Amino acid sequence: MTSMEKIQSIKGMKDLLPQDTWMWQRVEDAYRRVMALYNYREIRIPALEKTALFARSIGEETDIVRKEMYTFVDQGGDDLSLRPEGTAGVVRAYIQHSLSIQEPVSKLYYIGPMFRRERPQKGRYRQFYQAGSEIFGAPEPLADIELVIMLRDFFTQLGMQDVTYACNHLGTPESRKAYTQRLIEFFRKDADRLCEDCRRRLETNPLRILDCKQEGCREIIARSPSIESGRPESSSRDFDRFVEGLTDAGVNVRVEPRLVRGLDYYTGIIFEGVTAGPEEGEDSLAIVGGGRYDDLVGQLGGPVTAAVGYAIGLERVIDLCAGRLGPEKVPDVFVVFMGGEAEKVSMRLLHDLRGRGWSCDFDPRAGSLKSQMKRADKCASRFVLVLGEEEVRSGKIKLRDLRSGEQADVSMDDLQKIVGEKLDRVQ
Ligand code: AMP
Image 1: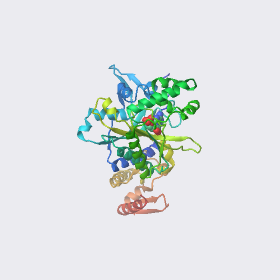
Image 2: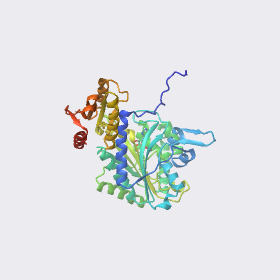
Image 3: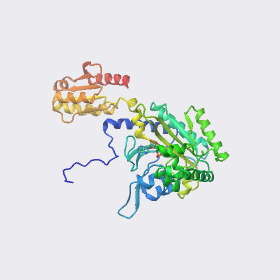
Image 4: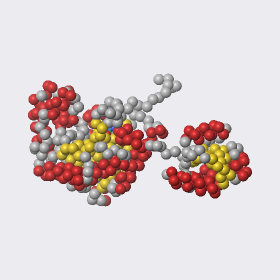
């Protein structure tokens, strides 16, 4: 590569440009608002962790750990990976900082980028953003119920009322083991008709076969034994409570006995929020996944602590609600000035107006009146103020209301009154 060749971003990792970032801010603000309403506190964890953390939590045999992590040995010889999801890091931090001693129940949330080297396609990236929440210390299904109700509230704020929550209960470790054995026996009979991945899963992680999307495998899966029959009473009772609690709250739940998730740490109730894709005729789209992972804190060396959480895929959410988020907020005022004295007055004016909480812009190139006006038009501010030598001398500023087209010469005092009133009305 010559030094003049342009360097492009990495495949599957996209830039979020200013024409889109305002939508991200709106969605993230909505998430933070809902978190504040439910009293969840933010946790920020590193993007890079020791590879062993993900191998021990997500599972050595999962697709994520086997083939999708960005893993490298750093200059100091440490085996590190970019986080492919948030829960493992949150659990590590929860243990490392003894949060269980500080409070018996912790309600936490995070927003940030995750990294998985998957095949890039629409709605699937190699760097993508998740917003997630976790509850530590509460084994009761009320915690699971709260999480899903919270999700419903968040999606409702974004105008997405049509999310359905598919859910299942994976039973206890013992019942899951027995169920896995039944699955192995069942799938062995048809092993030669399974896809290559599923044949391997049959040996390493048979539950994951249920998640295969291949046509041939789906047919066999449809006839496979259901998890419900061998599930202990206590699990089914918790699951019924969960489904009932959500139904009572008006949440769309759908029991799906063959639902499994791609991460090994899940133990009991699991759920996945799905909605129709943004284009007509598209397959339904998973926008959030989560569930119980009661063993993970203990497995990673912490005190045995029940836990439950979920992660929302923000790219998909933004794709789905993009049309409903607008319009982008424009500046309140754009200041145009001509001449040295007008420049000084304008700088003071900008400072003053911003001090009052109005968003203001100007063109620092201070070109011709025409070019500044063009720039004002482009940024579509609500008002334009024009200051020339004449205006400085008379103490009156030209105020143009771009929405009504009205124009008036106003004094400083009037300016603040007129602009303030109109802005109050439109905001
Ligand atoms: P998971 O962490 O695999 O349970 O995924 C939770 C949610 O994150 C999914 O429902 C997706 O919406 C989103 N997600 C997972 N992987 C990707 C990806 N590669 N690109 C974009 N979104 C993703």
